[in-house]
Image (cartoon, rainbow, N blue to C red; front, top):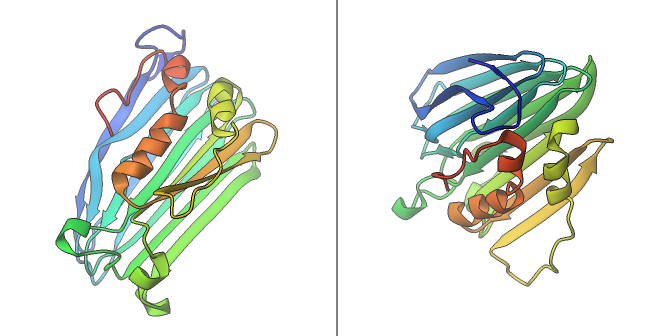
Amino acid sequence: MLLPRNHGRGAWAYLASFGGGLVDGDSIHVEVDVGAGATGLLSTQSATKVYRSPRGCRQELHARVGEGGLLVLLPDPVACFTGARYTQETTVTLEPRASLVLLDAFTCGRAARGERWAFEHYLSRTHIQRAGAPLFLDAIRLTSEEGPLPARMGRFEALAMLAVFGPEVAPLREALLRPLEPLRRRAPVIETASPLGDDGALLRVAATSVEEAMSAVRARLKPLPQVLGDDPLARKW
């Protein structure tokens, strides 16, 4: 499933394409290995929908990227419906000259049906390490037990985080760190970007709609076809 990278068209392989819906008690565990000098793309067929789940749902991803390898993780956003309880954990281990593109996004739920931030619990934890040393640790916890979520989230309906590391994704790092336009009052999209170490960058997006959030992410991913040799987003977002 993994191809040696030659920067020509088709120089990457889909590791998998998953997604769909999670119901009460579901637990998904995914293991990914990208060999030395190989490129892997992991995506979803659609948004991950989390239904009412009193016992909770869980999804874990553990990935390892070999020397000179590249892993691109581009799942669609998670959408938690009314009464959902969801936990996800992503752990990526990079060899010294391995590279990574990682997107994590979630939405308010079914806004068109009046279900804005109506879930019970959302917890996301992302841990990236290189050669045993931590590079990045990020955790988000949203729970109705700590106060009404609609009031706390205000006008925003989607949040996204995009992290890149490694020599193979230098064009993406430059795109993430380019100067931002001055922020307008009540802008539909708010973006913030910062460098991470010597070869990484982090972008955070808050938007008033899922479409606005994904459009902002896609704009920052314009160099991705240059990196992969093809465009995996041609029919997405």
